[in-house]
Length: 84
Image 1 (tube, helix red, strand yellow):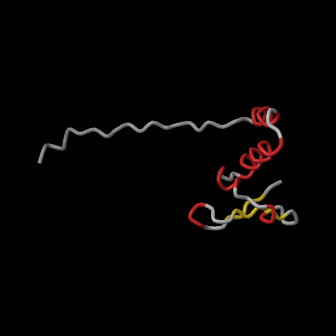
Image 2 (tube, rainbow, N blue to C red; image 1 turned 45 degrees about the vertical axis):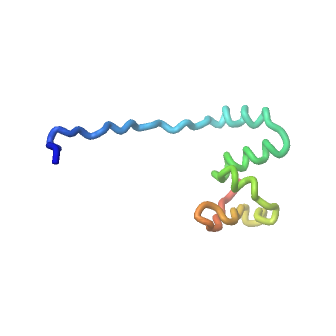
Image 3 (tube, rainbow, N blue to C red; image 1 turned 90 degrees about the vertical axis):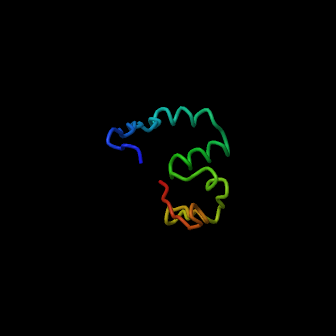
């Protein structure tokens, strides 16, 4: 067994998340149109994943409760999210 007393820990770098400001998001959405814009706004506003947004059905949206039900999301579970 080699001598393990002189080993050092690897430095872990903290990464800063890249986030768009509200103005940048509005400017990006203004360049989009129709279905693409709707999907981008849903992903941005609700936190859905792209594949969850692509399989979203109209009957999964409840306008009275202001919620969206994502069927078979990650882990094959149903997730309810809100929209404003």
